[in-house]
Image (tube, rainbow, N blue to C red):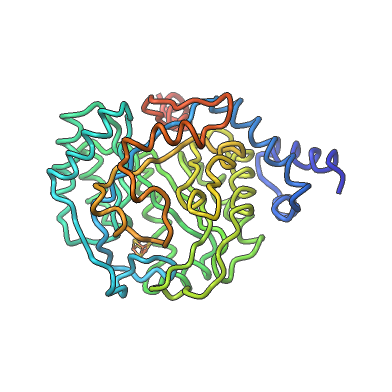
Length: 356
Ligand code: SF4
């Protein structure tokens, strides 16, 4: 396929309000030489819609307990080899203090899905964070009751990440024993309804997934108009049902990322840690293929290795504050800069303005 033909297809995909599945499958199947125009196109759209800044989100993984058995995740409840931990209020606040002292204006509070800690505990923690620090709070704690989501929103939480992992119902339910695809969708709707800036995302290279599934994921992202979308390759973990499966292809993940940028325009797209945890650090490539967010990890050092969703996770032996210099020196492409603003969703701002 000639490069000019690829560019014509890219123009069409970019302009159309409803993406064509066949075009997406075709673009996802581009070979190594042919994919350069795709990445360049995505980079241009990124520059036009979200600029050159790379937003920072400081992650605190406050608990690795989980009640679920997702077949790709090392935190699954059946992994009895994993030492479980939960941070105290003081430990979380200390981590947020370090994030704030680094000048970062978003903390992502992440945990496995558990209902052992009371929703009220997390609500009080959010209130205390908002009282003490000038910082946006993103939650990533899974499927909970609407009243819990409402309580946390009322306590001051700004954003919520709930990845779908795959938008195909049958594939989703085969990978998530005992969980319901419809409930996942319901949670995403409820979060949006409560006014959270809502994030989603998928995993590339899951068992049973093909290019058509990935194209459908991108169409799903567009349809739901998420404010953030995290895209990362599958990495098999020994203590999961998918041990022994092949790793997801990071280059295919970059193609999904690039197309997501072209189609969703101003969504915040992280260069995910899973992309960094490969034989080379693909986060730099991601930033040149549409990504505009980095998420340094500020979980206290003694717990970092225990939040092992997949093995070989990047940056678990450094503390978060030393990450910034490293990201700037090794990951940032030329002409890009670390952006220390809150980085609220541009879509959300549009939506609020439209509704006024
Ligand atoms: S992906 Fe999330 S919900 Fe599933 S086992 Fe892992 S931590 Fe639990």
